[in-house]
Image 1 (cartoon, one colour):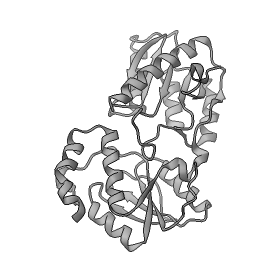
Image 2 (cartoon, rainbow, N blue to C red; image 1 turned 30 degrees about the vertical axis):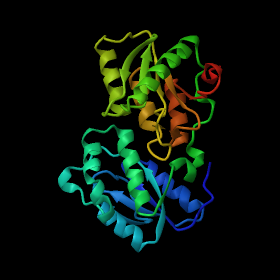
Image 3 (cartoon, rainbow, N blue to C red; image 1 turned 120 degrees about the vertical axis):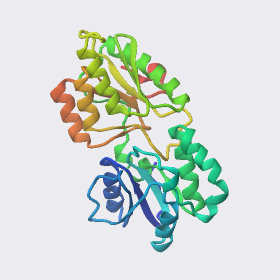
Image 4 (tube, rainbow, N blue to C red; image 1 turned 90 degrees about the vertical axis):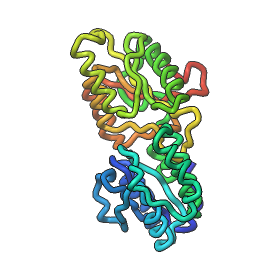
Length: 291
């Protein structure tokens, strides 16, 4: 649901990828003047049309200074972060000093979801309210059913059910959000390398004859069961669609209402060019809403 609270300026914490730019543009269309805090060595888009600053991933002290200077009261986390900060890069706020041992333990050994919850709590300790991307740009959310592409076959439905079960278990372990099933067999689980690298691995395995050339298979991406929806929603974009095509898959299924589809027009064009499907699952419905 889109937030109606517009008190205080909105800041977008920008990691890599197009998503932060889309969120910034969506906020501007709402009549806001978002401030972009671009993470150094992560944010890789042009934010020259917006007020912005570059900040190290671990520099909470500078982030707090920017928040105070620009009257920021609301924050959205968007885009990917490839690297966790080294201990030497961490500049904690005064309020975070007492929590520093726990912060370090989370950065060193915690899963992605644990790290994101910690980051959210740090922004809240700075007096900011943290929103999800879907609350600023609800048009990016995947809807239930066929988003585009080829109709599902019975083999596709079977692979989706198996991959969804695997993705749910993977998420409970706070490891990843995606799983790939080919011919009723799980052949890949998403780890720290991310979705695109997992798809490349499947393409290589298929080329080497380790995965059936005849059976296509599917990628399923779900929210982790314990995930805070204000950060790291599963995201599908053109690179994911092209990766699925290169891996020889029949298509991609995501959790409707809890996953983002960016550059939708290009994604749809790729489904048509490559004969893929893109489908939104309703996990609360019988058979996940599969037709």
